[in-house]
Length: 461
Image (cartoon, rainbow, N blue to C red; front, side, top):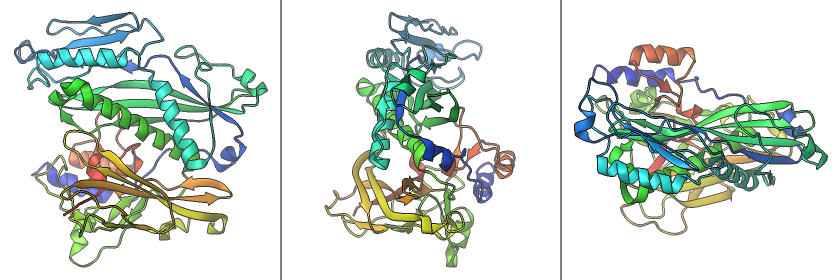
């Protein structure tokens, strides 16, 4: 309790801290003409390791015990003895050298058994040796750009730099009428954790003028999954890994398009009004949201000092029927009106996504509705009884004739406790939170993905 209570207090410190790297300036966006997307196909870094069996991982002097696996187009290199780690060299640019990364210290229980580790290695080799991660992410980005903005990007699979550190000369593309290139790099991929593990994928984007090579914008994006029991990653031909990989592509594509093409200087967060006996919950972030705040169904928010992992802070409220009425804040919000001259805004519409929550797997998208005219929607078809669902809305609008959008909505609390790839906040409030809580907190509104703990949610009767 003495460790969890200060973490609750940190929620108060989050207010006003939301801050993302600035999106491209509107003047730069206005200057973009014909844009091509270029996947940079050199292999990413990886930290992939597989733990040995229990008796091996508990032996030794406390050093990490495991096996490192690297897959390159022509070979597999692995260490098979305790206390040994071998990093496989990258031998072929045409293959993505990957393995399975799982880890814990020797004093902790093993993440997975030796049998599960061997099975996972086999599945990872089969599925990732030919993986073209940058190209797959680039295609996802191009699809979202066309869907959200109507802009079509040329896909140029072989126009990028030959290797890390090299720079492409895009002047030939300029002579073909392409004015800007959006480079996509998958720089880092792997797993974090011990008995419970999460998957991460790190991507970098650069917008380059083809005529003179001028860099007009760049940013890093990070996806990290929720934690799952280590044994789950090896089951059913690595089905969990494949599902999370696809979710990473989809989530990062949304975030890249939001940042590069859609976001404005509007506030990221919504702040509701405290009222009645909800004052204490509001003080702990109960009324705060990222993007457009929820209206209906009401949030069932029960922050608990004993639930340090925040897994039960947001309950699934039961709706009246299998056809719930979902409602959210109208755009523009009150706090938006100070940031933009709304005489320049037109064609306000809303998008809505609904996912089915599943055990031991990422949620499954079951409904995506676009161009809704009202900040509410009554489902036309009933959902199965007793199901648990996530949902999220956003607004899209035209600003000076170009499509823009808010972030997808989610609960702002509980805060996100970072690990490795997702960096902690650098704001004064967050630094104070680190000193108080002893953790590494991050405002959910600044993440490139929505953690499962923070989705809007409901349960059918």
